[in-house]
Length: 100
Image 1 (cartoon, one colour):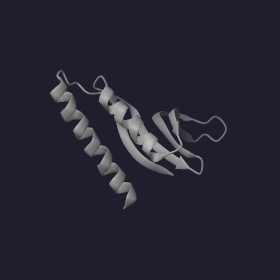
Image 2 (cartoon, one colour):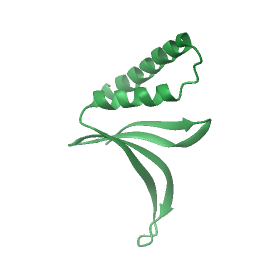
Image 3 (cartoon, rainbow, N blue to C red):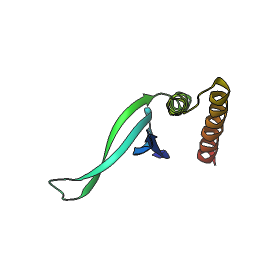
Image 4 (tube, rainbow, N blue to C red):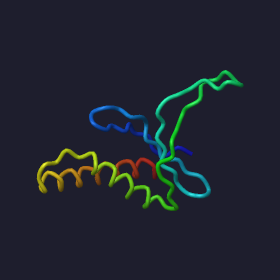
């Protein structure tokens, strides 16, 4: 089940869609970054790369937090603290949507 979907932007360029998928074994963070045509079925399929496997949703959230902090353009500690607070609120809003 896909539980999260967000564009991943690095250096002002969209790299793909960041998706959290869950199954009976845990959570996977995947980056969907294109499509290709399957030779046998002639159907278009999405290409993805798994960038993280986690046993808990909390581990997934920590990973997303670190990923978003690395994307920060903060130049001072105060700016970074504001970015961290904004990122925490963003993650909480996504988690609240999932709980509903």
